[in-house]
Image: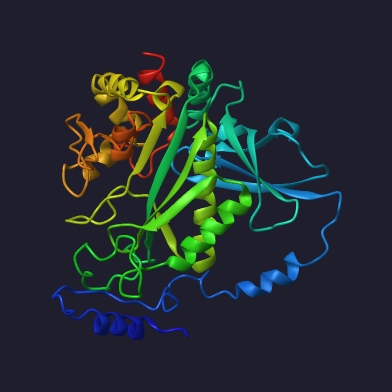
Length: 397
C-alpha cells in the first residue's frame, strides 16, 4: 500500500492523539512515505533479473570505498578484476579525482587509493567484494582525511598491549524534508520514554532498514554485535566489536557504507548528525568501549582507573579529536543533559550515563574489563578516536 503525502500526514495526526497515559504517541505505516524520493519509487525487484545472470568464473566486481575530504562522507567506485585476492595488497592501487571530493585542486587532482581491508559484497553477492581503502597524495603522503595512517601507527606501537575496541554507532533516519522519519510534518511525537528498545508501530520507525543492514553486515563479515532502537523516535544504534586493533575502525566505516547503501534502496536518508533535533531530544554518539590486555586481566580495574586519570588531563585534546569539526558538533550534543556530560568538564563514574567516561557496573563488580568513552560524536572518525585513546592511555603521549 502506498499513501500520498496528504494521506500519510492525515494518518500521522489520527494516530498522534493522547493515549491512556496522557502522552502523545506517533504511529506510522513504514511503507507509506517518501514520495519525494525518486529512488523509493523504483521497482527494485527488476534488479534481481540482472543479478541472476550467470557470473563469469574468472571475473569479480570490486567496489573500492574511501573517505572523502569532509572526513565524514564516503565515496565508492567499482572495477573488474580477474582473480580472487587473498589479501588487500593483492589488489591494484587505483586513482580518483580528488578535486571532486574536496581533497585536491584540479591542476593536480589524482589521489591514490590503497586497499586496506576486504569484505564480501552483500549487494552483488557471489565472489564480489567491498574494498576499504585509504587515500594518498601524489607523493604518497596521507591526505588530511586519512586518519587511518596515524591510528595504525599508534596501534602497531601498542600491539603488545592487545588493544580492543567496541564502537556503538547511533544514527537517525530522515525524510527528504530533513525531519526525522515518521514524525508529524507540522508537529512532534510524544515525549521520549516509550521508544528505546520499543516495539509496535506507534513506537518504532524504520525497523525494515535496520534488519536489512544487520543481515548485510553479517554477510559481509563485519563483527556487528547487536542493534536496538534508541531513545529518540527514528533513532537507532548498532554495535561493532569488540574487535582488536585497527579492524574495529575499518569495520565501522564499512558498516556505515552498508547502512547508507541499504537505506538508499528504501529511499531514506541516514544522518550521523550528533544533534539532529534541537530541544529535549537525545543526540547521537559513537561511544567507544576500550580495553587492553592489562585491563582485562585480574584486578584490571586499577589499570582502568589509571587510564581515566590520564584521560582527565587530555580532555580538550580528545574533544577536538572526537568529531570532524574539532568539537563544534559535540557542542550541540554534550550539554550535560539527555544522557551526556558537559563538553567543558571531564567526569567519570560507575554505571553513570551523564559522565565523560563510564565504568559499566559489570566491570566494577568483576574488577576488570573495559571503559566506555561517551564523548565521541556519531559522525566521528573512529580512526581519530582510537588513535587518541591509544596515544593517551597506552603510549603516554
